[in-house]
Length: 165
Image (cartoon, rainbow, N blue to C red; front, side):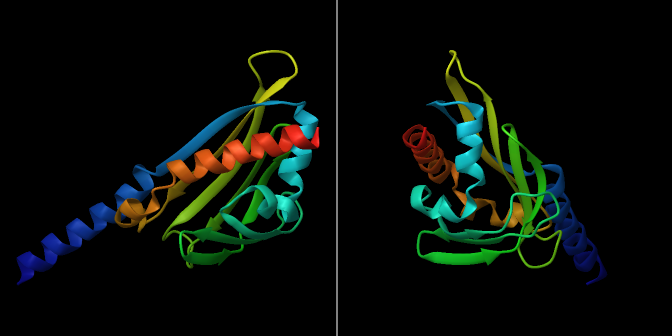
C-alpha cells in the first residue's frame, strides 16, 4: 500500500509539473493592410471584440497594465467568465493579459495580441496567441483544441482592422 501511495504521488507530481514545464501554446498570425495604429485601435477597443471574434461574448475594461478585465468566452456550447489582469499594454505593439481557471496555478492563460511590420509597406502582421501553464494543463490539453478557433478569430480581426482603416 505504501508503494502504491508513493507511485501515485510521484505520478501526480510529474503530471502537475509538466503543465508548468511544457505549457500548451496556440498562436496564429494574419496580414492586414493597415498601420500599427489602426490595428492597435481595433485590438484595444475591447467592448467591440464580440463584433469580430466568434469566441468572445463580452470583453470589458481598460487596456492598461494592472487593470482587471471581464472576459466572457464561448467555446462550442460552453461559456466561461474570467477576470484577467492586463500585464502588457505597449501601444501599437502588444496587448497581453493573464487569467486563471479558478485558483492561480491550476490552469493559467496568457492571451496576447502582437502587431509587427508586415511583409510590405502599409501592412502589419497581427498575431494572436495564448500560453497555458499550470498543474491541470497536461490533463486539460486534450480539451483545448484551440488552433482552428484562433485561426478564425485572427483572420476576422485582420479583416475588421482593414474595414476600420
